[in-house]
Image (cartoon, rainbow, N blue to C red; front, side, top):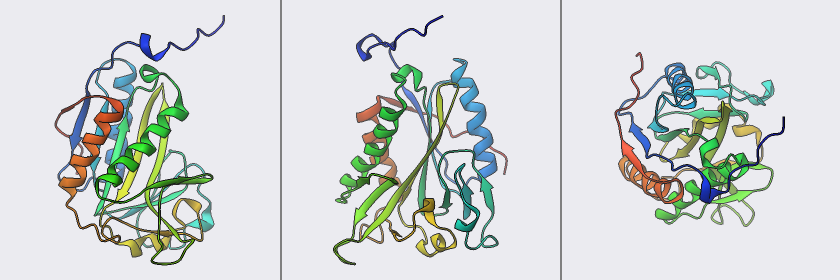
Length: 238
């Protein structure tokens, strides 16, 4: 039995508005992961709409499937969670906007590389809103910012991306540094990339509220991925 060819974009079924949720308190990592996994199953079964979930975590480190033990420099500093997503070690904490992205990649053409590129450029669009030029680098995951104030060749990371696809539906997502405590990144080798620093909007002199960031994320998302509709955040245990 041969696999049917992918449908051209013009003949794909219409995509319904994406549910858009924002949590107003820090969410524990294990609870968020459990909620994401349940939602992915429901989306794949056609029982729930796609969802983008914005939140913050309490301080913690996550280990992706490629994380190396020696990249966790301070294992007792914060809780460490095995994430099950691609990538290596990352830090999450207050002042960092997490966007968990549960989208049906199948209904969006099925091209995972194009999907990931769309997410990366979504963040670049958001940074542009605040007068920051985000760039991509071959062999370096995430979104980068040149730092001529530090040196002609210096680049710092401002956003990380790590995804998993299950049953054709994405989960996990990305993190954008708004105003986190950057010193907390020193407990790991962020995303396994040594020799580069980490920055944030505040570090770059853009003092903006999380609400402003959320508005920019939503506007830029709708431009690239289609309409959204506000819904309550997933209910999770404390």
